[in-house]
Length: 275
Ligand code: SIN
Image 1: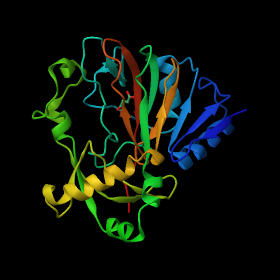
Image 2: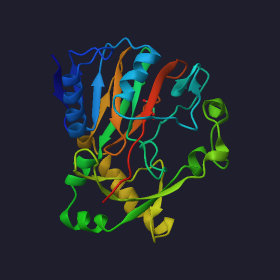
Image 3: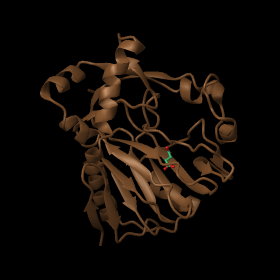
């Protein structure tokens, strides 16, 4: 029997489930919980890459990330790896994945394979709760805006990828995506109004210069990342986090120098975003 512990502004811990064998009823309950909270955590799972893929496919087609190095033998599983000699990590700043795509991915399932002795947590932020706590004046201004998102400055040829991370990414010539999305989306699963800008990939508001956009974007970023909108997940081996890119941000804390952290990530296709 599934037990669920909701977490403040974003997410829920789910217990009493083995992701290798899910009944239709459990899946239906998980889908409702995911729509409501935008983020699910499962601990103590023993998942082969095939089982991880099987669970992911229950939510939609797999999106193969064109920039991440895949797990050997599994082209649709991305490797999120940091080795002892590496200074920087993948995803070390607040972002939401794939906002640079015309149809951003629904979300990702990150599975903990190897962890540092301490540290290596992931922070999450809830973008619907963050919208709710803005003033009515700000909400109505934001509802009228669209924003540009790009992958060029992160994965492209001009991106400042540190040398010791170069082998973690590829296909810089494919980082040509620019997409426009509403700044406030109607979340496709929950129907909640949700802020959809992020420090990783949003470059400006449509019709505004970057300079004009920066102060309002910074204000929104500070607001979304306020502690009351966030949750810090402490990983354990075999834990799996499943986040909704349209409802959350995440940040991988880089506080374990000289140690290895290895995660497997599977991403699921999404749908066009509407205001
Ligand atoms: C990511 O940004 O997808 C990686 C998150 C993490 O490693 O915790």
